[in-house]
Length: 360
Image (cartoon, rainbow, N blue to C red; front, side):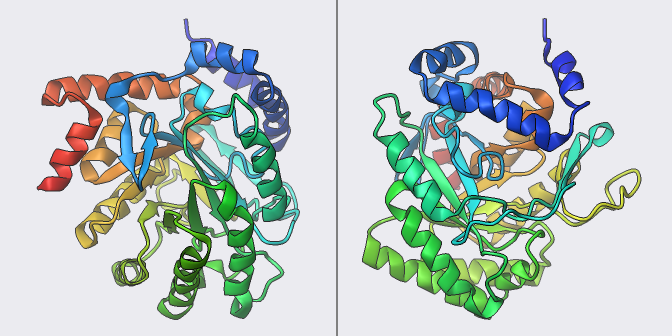
């Protein structure tokens, strides 16, 4: 019997940030106690060698990741693999600590299985995240699943100084991250999306590439907006390939509202089921333009959604809003659906499928 819809109904009666804080208190407790992690893993974990993925020079226990925005400060970083995730994207963090936008700033749209947020990169700063991850990684029960850190621009930093702001964050998180994702596509920091234009994007990606030469190897990815025109996608791909990026994350949230039955008249980024077709189309367009590895995020709720992303060119998947609506058993349900799909297609492992797909 699935009790999560009843629990979700009770949680949805509370303010989104209030319930987020309460759930996080429990998750942070579990992350600090190996017994609790073992119990969670027994209940919700995903253990299946068939679903392992090798990407960006790293081994992922399965393709499912927790998307950026849920664990901004790495408060529960050790718990996510126990909940069935094969990687986690922490953040977005910024060079300067910042409170984000004033509340209310998160809104649920249950009828559409969607959410709107205008959080505004609320976080304790890149240095604080780095220090926390240093301590966490020293614990004997630290999981092996890769951890990505998503880096954005501090709100008070002028756009002309954005590169230096990103540099401060990158230097802080570089020693503790397995991957780094550059976020220039959030709609909730004024002017941030202008950094996707050729000039500022080239400056930022050139800086990141130079840091790799100084600080050592690091998979570098760029998170892409779902609201870009085709010519803008061309620019993003051109700059990513020119500066030697390792992959793209498609996509961030959208400012569009035309896919909703009515406009809720709340500013911010829309996520969830209505974003799915848009994010999937951007993923397909990116695959047409580049062989760079792609991480798909946006509107994934079911195994069919996940399979559509894999068939469109993704090597890894991320969920956030879908996990809130579907509940903690979601990774296991996705895993079961992908196993059935692999069996039907005659592929022994997901890695075999990805290799055959990319060889075409």
